[in-house]
View 1 (tube, rainbow, N blue to C red):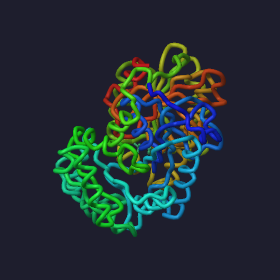
View 2 (view 1 turned 135 degrees about the vertical axis):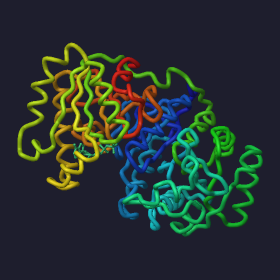
View 3 (view 1 turned 180 degrees about the horizontal axis):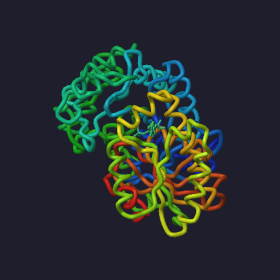
View 4 (view 1 turned 90 degrees about the vertical axis):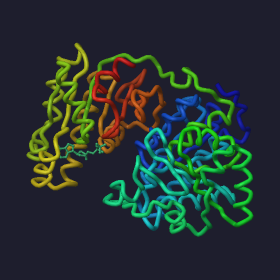
Length: 437
Ligand code: ADP
């Protein structure tokens, strides 16, 4: 664990000791992904939902503030990010990490460039890096071009994204279009030569008035070679990949202690609102394991039936003998026909509200180990449960850790949560996760 010497100026917010690394993530599940990488590298991490109004619950090395700023207007993304920065500064953070998607999801206007520049202005700095490289998830950067698996970003399917279509794989060009400052490149040949070469390249770029450098990385080794050159850099901007090397800069090594959560007990349940293919397989695997599962029908919710009350009455007698699953997960055709009848947004919101009410009811019935499948569904459940901070524990599958949170619905020991975004997790995720806990 780190030998932290709390910064004397740092106690306005962090009543339990100064943090080392302050992170700002532009979406919820991306925040968890970053937090999980930091925990694996040895940091004790709390993720907050939005900028907290009060102090931290636990003594940690890093905090990830989860915002929802990826596609909001740039001015709003800047305002929220600066609020998060201020709070993290008050917590004593010595380095800041702006985390965005590993496919560099943004529009021609932002928000990666505008938020990066606003953070640079606020910190009064003239240089930072930008790299979405995450080799563990097949995101690599070569000569400033982002690859998703074997394909350029612009051929990867991301060119058709409904909100942030990525039609250019040249990150220097993409970021330059969003920035006032000059954008440059630290290429793979420099990265391969390690810290001194990277620091020399940074000095050279600064002399050329470059303020933000895209960094190539083809492997985790590249990210680990990059990390020492980031020591002392006030702001790092990246996907979650760069996080694997940062804890070492603070004298922190991987440890079991970093992912330790309070002991788990209480009843178990899974709530699934994700219709992604991986979740579909996970629902089928749970049903085939013989555990009780109940499907929620969106058309009955739309017809005004109190589906949550029905589900809770079904679940109550079953919970004592093990995990139950409640799901709206359905195949693409079924979802399309529901959306045709109710409307796309309306169906989404209606199902999210119903599943969040069910999650709330399950916790009120004594569930203390809860898996939620679906990014938006997780957001709705966390909000309904009034959760504002989550301590990050061990990874179940890549990108999905167990977390622990306090909520008035589970007074005392709190609640263990696993929030799984759609396509994450192996087929046996819903059963394996409880065994690991
Ligand atoms: P993922 O992480 O897989 O994208 P999300 O929870 O983010 O999952 O998104 C799934 C969306 O689909 C949510 O808005 C949810 O309410 C909605 N949804 C879930 N089940 C159904 C269904 N059977 N019909 C229509 N919409 C659904």
